[in-house]
Length: 190
Image 1 (tube, one colour):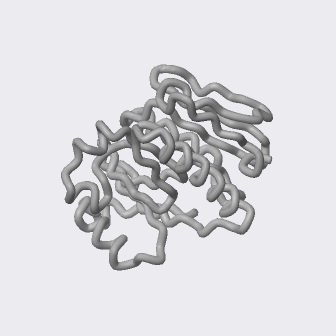
Image 2: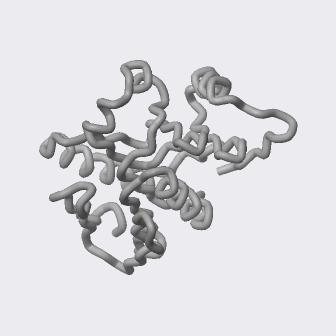
């Protein structure tokens, strides 16, 4: 991951950033609230497989539950603080999703997912991921999981609380945000 400080030389508006992403579809980009352009590294094989399992398990539960929409790591959201972020896995209730216009659902939705998950890979900075998780919570996420396979640790983020740290958990509960969802961490954390 590389972070480029564009300001004060250049300020990218939301429209300009969207055009930049569409003009460079093979680049995975994010834009911070401070106007920094983040160029994400592609993941390696193990990280890609772990991320697929995370998205697949969330997606399977979402399909059977029927109360929301799940997203994978290729989905970009425009958060209320003006940053553009792509969590590794995320979920939005149908109530919130249906409040968006058809145009908003087609582009980078201007909403913070209610649930987000980030899966640490060897190229990630844990500090940057922690900051990103807090940013999601500050922008309206109700539950967030930071999964770190290298240390076999999970940090659970909730509004108004410090992160809860779990060492070697075998599963995680979706709590009241994703009621009934239990994520088996086999193949993701281990």
